[in-house]
Length: 258
Image (cartoon, rainbow, N blue to C red):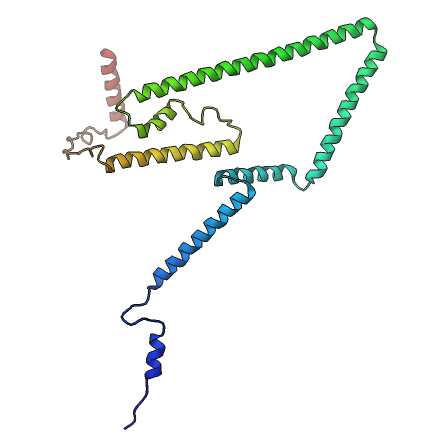
């Protein structure tokens, strides 16, 4: 009688498996590897943001958009060459201005020089006054905005039916801390950032509502089922255009007789 030794086969099948334990499911191993990859990616992103001086992904996105727009404007031209030419042109313009001033002094009469300088002084004074007036209006406008914001917050805080968690969104609807008010609609980056910011606020508001229900601060409304009222629309449907015109005319006449 021949005896077959299968000891090695058994050992090969059970290598690495503890007695009484079952192997980890393949899905669990896959999920663990995926989780490690996500952590590594996040760490690498955090390192990149810190190294390049960005505080958030939004700032990085804005920088990339600015770089993309600048690249489109520059094209294949060399940025250093563009800056050098701009500096050269600025230098020439300053020299031309000085030369024009000297030419005027040499060709005009003293009286003309006095009039020209007086006019230049008045123009500069007018520009200064315009700048001062604009700054004053900005200060006044900012003071009014601050006063408005404070009043709105005070009034909303006094309404007990509005929970504290909902106040930021209510304030935003009334113009307080609403980025859409001061947005430059021609600034693509600013518009995108505004949409994201408002989206975050709305999402936060939704979570606050859900949390209030979950915490039992608000009762879930009970909706009772009601039988729909019988409808006679099908019976009154016109069969053709003539009947439709007749019904419409009768309704109009009935309306104007009131």
